[in-house]
Length: 170
Image (cartoon, rainbow, N blue to C red; front, side, top):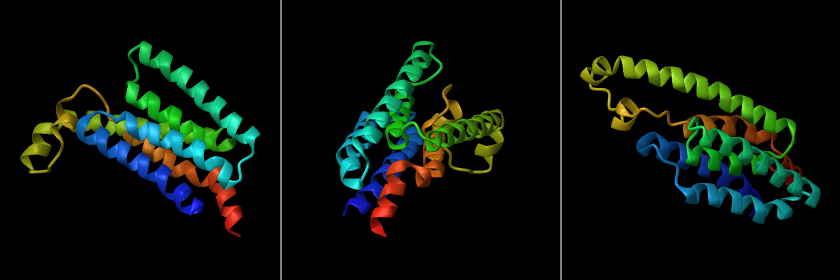
């Protein structure tokens, strides 16, 4: 049961956040709250030590502080900041966090370039009958929740909670 929660909740929350951001340009607070609460509830049961959990909370606070500054400078959305912070709990201060952050950055760059290209070619894309959400073509924002989800999917198998859960299954 614990393994099912570990292996399903985090990816499901990422997928919901990405889909919501793509379609509405918002990430619901309940997704980030569910992600954070699930980690805090399941981490001790999955075999993480109190020290590992504390470092995960510290990592989330550091990520939140950086994201808060970026939000205050109007370069990051609030939903993105909360999602990144909640996801950081699942990675802690480990090499998995570095993989997560670098994957998010790379996916974000590709996503941004793709969307900017689509926006410059929007008349041609719409004329071909390709169904795209209006928010994707006409909004000024980039649905960065998609990049956060991609980075999370890439890095999740190397996260401490994933590894601990696999070890417990052996």
